[in-house]
Image (cartoon, rainbow, N blue to C red):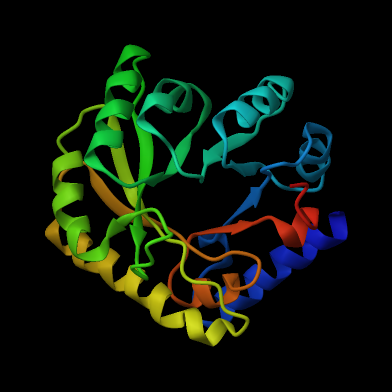
Length: 228
């Protein structure tokens, strides 16, 4: 695992340097859904300190088991509003907020524990009906509405583009999210930052870095095939 993690970090650094970016501006999120706590501990010992989870119940058990380790937990899966009270207690950053309804629920639950919950707005940049996320042309209005909430803070955008064997084909989707983030940034909306772009996974993270990704979500290249 140490070798795999080092290889990913080297590839992140190389991809960043090749497009004139600072390697330290790209953060590795180790995707640990379905991965046992002992494997997460092993990955932590090998240099990973941010882990992304997809399921509230599964994550809660692992977070409790690994509570003595200084891990930053991110939620990257589809989140239902009725799970908001658990999410705000467990996660430092929620990548997948796709509606005002969900943001409102997170705001309400975060207020109860005196927390400002950092979130990303998930954008369905490809327009695929099977993907979660707000439509690109609705993102601006949704962000303006969510920005009014006092206990959530928008830190950027997230997307999951279509899967392609050839990473060149995914470039337009990453570029689309980057351009959207820059357009929103120009609006200078209070309580909204576009510093973070969560895009890129095992098969295409180098292309995502080229188009401004600051959070790459890597699972398979670290842990191997999923236990599903």
